[in-house]
Length: 380
Image 1: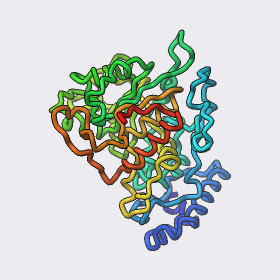
Image 2 (image 1 turned 180 degrees about the vertical axis):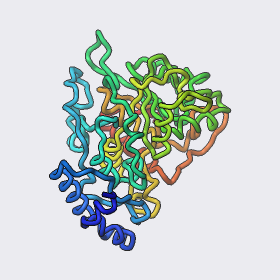
Image 3 (image 1 turned 90 degrees about the horizontal axis):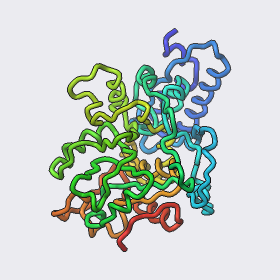
Image 4 (image 1 turned 30 degrees about the vertical axis):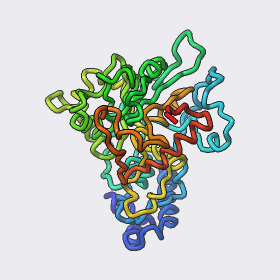
C-alpha cells in the first residue's frame, strides 16, 4: 500500500488542500486530525507506518500554533545536584515555571522513529522537519551519547561551573581571559577566534556549538583575524544545531570514506562520535517558545526567525551546568563596541539580521543576570 493510499482515509490528508488555501485558519482541525492519525497508528501496531504528507512552510502566513506546540519529550530526572548554588535551586517563580531541567537535549537513533518524525514534521527547521522529505537512514546514523555532556570535576564541591563565550565586541580589551579559563568548562560557538586574543577571551574550549554552515563559513569570515579552524582542544565535545537538511547531509557524510572536503576536516582530528552531540528539536523549540518567542514570528518571514547560535549555547550550558557565566553577549551598551571582539583595530556597528531578535536576547540575558540565574559580563 502506498503512503498516499494509507493516508487518504484520514481527515488530515483531506485538510492538506485547505491549508494551502486558508493558511492558519485550519490549524485546529489539522492538529486534531494529526493527533487522530498518531492515535490510530498506536492502536494498530501491525500497520506499516509512513511519513505524513509533507507540510510546507508556504502554507502559513505566520508561525502555526499547534495544540501540542508546548509539549516536549522529557528524559529521566536530571542528576541530583550537590551544588547549593545551582541555578536549579533558583527560587524565581517565572524561571522555575519555564525551565525544564529534564527536557530531552539530544537527538539520536534510539529516540527517533516514524511517529516522532511525523510529530516533528509540524515544526519548521531547526525546530522540526517541516518541508523535509523523510530521511530515516540519515537519522539512524546519529549515535546515542555514551555519557553526559559534562560531569562534576572530581574533588570539588559538586558544582559544575561553566563559562559561555560569545563573539561580541564587548570582550575587546576586557582582560577576562584568565577568569574565563578558571571555569570547569568553557563553551564557545561560531568564529571563536582565540590565537592573539587569549588575554581577553581565554584559550580553553571544552564544548563547541555549531551548525554545518557556521563551522565552515567562519573560516572565511574570520580568516583576516587569524582564525584557522574551529577549536580542537584534546577531548573537546562538539554540539551540532540541526539547522536544516544541510546539517543532516553533513552528518551523513561522516559515514563515508574520508576525502578532501569531508566534514571531519573541520574538526582538526578531534571528531569522535562518542563526543559528538546533536541538539534535539524539542530542546530548540522549548528555548524559543518559553524564553525567546519573538513577535517577528507573526510576520511573513516567520520561518527564518530563530534564536542565535549563542542563545542555544547559553541554554545548553544552563541545562548541563550548575553555575553559568556569559561573556561576549549583547548588553545594553552594545553600540559602544564593535560587532566582534576580533575587530580590535576597527570600530564597526553591530549588525542586526532579520532572522534573530537581538533586542529580545539582550533583554533576556539582563533578566537572567538580575535574577541571578547567570552572571553576565557587562561594562556598565
